[in-house]
Image (cartoon, helix red, strand yellow):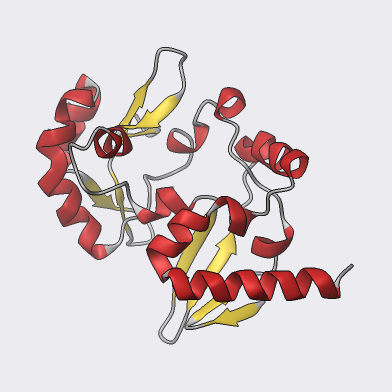
Length: 192
């Protein structure tokens, strides 16, 4: 593990390879699981504010869930997560013409309809953050649905921290990411 700023970064963020392969997994991470996507406190309000801009991209079932319980709920651990449809799909999912599950919030962002990319937990996946009193743990969440992403990452020589450069900068800042990169380079040199 490495400490960078107030974050403790798991070594496997530097060691392990990863590159999403949507053609294989079909966006399964937005569908499977026992709860919705984890949300930071301010993200619930942001999502509520942008809801009118993404509403028409949501399924009728998702719209009904949101009407009944809102965009988020507290899961069994007491954490705020996105609402889900039928115990599976995040309410903000939609399926493209090839059957790949995608994010309606991200679609609205890419079409310049909103200025919020998507929840940081989604943007950072397969990294999961855990906040503690004095630090944030930055861990790799291994999941069988991402097996193709691990294989493609190995094939392309892309480590998790490299694949997630943009969301890591979004969450921790440019200087933090530069330090992570330096730590990763030194660590890699020392293990060759």
